[in-house]
Length: 409
Image (tube, rainbow, N blue to C red; front, side, top):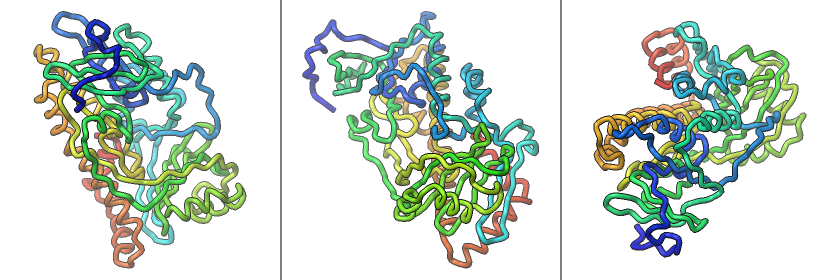
């Protein structure tokens, strides 16, 4: 904690007060704001909400072949629909109707069909830029949200009944509740001196959008190879979003290949499920780490999404896990308002941490187990996992449990 704030603008009377301040106006922060904006206080007034975001507003979203995408679980799409944001995404979201899991060079396969679970889609794949645009569009109907952008938090002073923030612009804010939705390098987490547990997977993710000769038909592929898993997610325009997990050296080498050599390497590793790779977009490489905050709450502060946990992309659950953080925290704040309680009280925040713990640990354990099991070439594990894929394909209770977690429930 800082003992005092030295920014001149923080003299009493020059502070702007908000019920909630959200640090970070990206996807998690905007979703958090959209979840809280409709809530009413005991006096019937809406919550006053400030969003502090370092990046300037992007007015026009122009899509390209290479845009980054996210896989949205069925649960996430349902939550976006409840908030009124799905109407702006539905037309562009590509439905995942089938999940196909296989192990390169071995017989084990598993398939999951949306129709078997009485849903139109197991999930959806959509460009991140469009998700951001949909959230901002939805926020436009609320007058109780104030943006500070481009701006960021310079200092934080925690007091008994409030938190005081000094922004780098010189402005000052006070709030009952500070929400850190500011990503894996969270400033809120740093200011509170919250430590993290960090584990390197010694892997990198190579990400690119590709087109294939055979239409994907709404199938999401997860193919396990000697170097790591290859995910091919269905995208609009008969494109696929590729997430190829490799050793850092292999990722660097494959990123450096010319387009023809890259397409051949991908065809060899992925097999012929989608035929030839007809177009390959720009390739990006990211190191893969597990980062967990040792605590998710502090005095009048909670961490949400990647600020609290950054996980391996093998099961495509990172963003969806953060959405469930938002949903749970918003529900607790709503209940506190209805009971005329202080929304920044530590009991409420502790409930948030406790109620999210099981889901977060289940997803982290699932991803860790998949990484360990499918990156290991020891013969007993190879045989065991292929039997496991066969068992998963035919044993309904096990398959249903796997699908429910994948769908975000």
